[in-house]
Every structure is written in structure tokens, then in C-alpha cells.
Image (cartoon, rainbow, N blue to C red; front, side):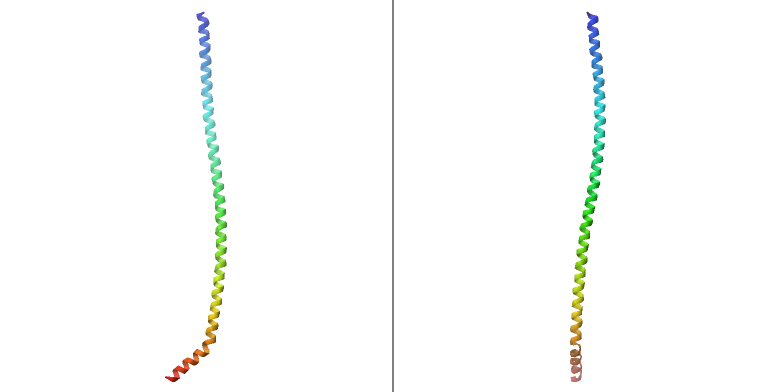
Length: 111
């Protein structure tokens, strides 16, 4: 009976040893899968970050272009108003020039 018991104990030890080997193999596979998952996750994060930057850049460019167009329109309006005021001033000067000359001549002759 002791031979039979020894044989059973040896079988159990062998089975436990194989089970331990299987567990080590599974642990190694899990570790490899974690590494692969981490790499894939980082790659996805990098891709999403790049897409987000591209979208933000496009949005910023659109905002800048709209602001530039608005500023150009306002600048043209201000320039047009300035030209109109300048024309008005020139017209007033031209209209009052003869009167101013007469007044100056009159003042000089009285003196």
C-alpha cells in the first residue's frame, strides 16, 4: 500500500507542478496582453489627441479669418467715412475761401 500511496502522491505532485506551470504561463500571457492593451490605448490616445489638435486648429483658423474679414470691413467703412468727412471739409474750405480772402483783405486795408 505504501507504493500505491507514493504513486498517488507523486501523481498529485506532478499534477500540481503542471498546474503551477500552467498558471505561470497564464500570468505571462496576461502580462503580455496588458502590455499590448497599454500600447493600443496609448496609440488611440495619441490619434485622438492629434485629431483634436487638428479640429482646434481649423476652428481657430475659421475664427481668425472671420475676425479678419470683420476688421477689414470695419476698416473700409472707417476709411470711407474719413474720405466723406475730408470731402466735406474741403468743400467747406472751398465755399468759405472767397469770404475768408475778402475778410483778410478788408482787415489789412483797414489797418
